[in-house]
Length: 252
Length: 252
Image (cartoon, each protein chain N blue to C red):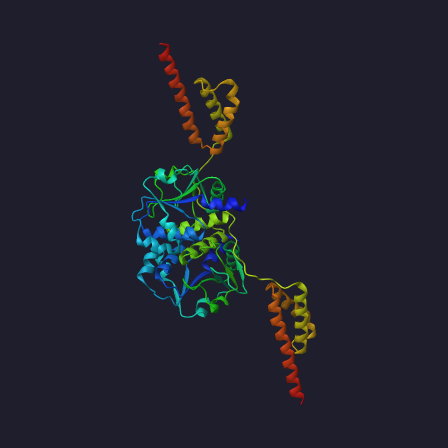
């Protein structure tokens, strides 16, 4: 998938919320969508909308709420969508295939690179109606605790939007500039460390190899950066100087 | 990982919320945790707790809220945890490694099969403090829209709890009993279909092969179940009977 396809794919995904009871859930769903780069929200007969609570819960995604398309029928909400995927907490006796989010979202994204697709969420308490179920090509169910599998609506939107973002290849995070120091710098540190430990009398001959092995293991695991090596070697230098001063005092 | 390890691993994960402002977020986080099989919630100096709003938002996870351990210091909340992972929306100039949820949660789970671990969330507005940051062995950042990356606290808890559940090998969903029919049954259907289409005059000799190829493609893709084949063949049988009756009428 090239970069243009990816951008288009998220733009082709429509989140459809059917008969949502609580306007706060609409706002929270809009926020969840926007954090993952989705923007097209469709609402089928929301119980209370527009509503101040939706705007409050949307925080900075109030644009997604304002641009939401309010529909009075399922047909209206699904118009133009070539793939409709239903979200269900319960796997009922439906003929459709039921997939996990990680299986389903790549399929949705692949289709969305070319044409509009819809992710359909039922009402908070009752889920998808039979009329809605039969319009879905397949279902997605979020793996959950069998003893309590009822996710909040906005949480379900968050989770599937996240999987969509990952499926679209946008799952990278900006990484801080952690640059581990090159091998020779690490080696110089270990030489310096061994010398210093010898000078202060910490190393006894028979234990040297084993102890240095353990210290090497520790610092290698930490993947030291150059600046950290400088700090550690600075400490070693001052340790020796302090030690030398102490010896001088003692010998005076 | 065997099944016992898995169960133990989720039980060894502690979700730590530091200085949470809104009690509703504590309840919603508890619900998010419970849906994914997590139960140990630690709260460092919550602004308002206990609070009715927390119980309301927890819905059926009110037990997680009731059992939450309220701590007055970070030390208290992290006591006994051998691995502390911080959740951050911003990747700042920290020396720790920053991983995605999908990279980080398997590491947390692997450790949690043996000893307690902690997932540390900062306050809603300000995130982790420097004091909290330095206590983390590594950081996890949720991939997000660079233009709006601020997930609701409970949404972040939901998402990471989900990744923990998947990392623990509990990502399966109960699948409905969709049993595709065996090849020979599908074949009998195609033979029946071709006969019927011939009888009603839909097939012309030159197109038969191509058309049947297309119909085979369609029905193969749908992975028909035995019951569906029975329905489709029932339709074919009645189609032939209807056609025969019509012909008889016409010839009378």
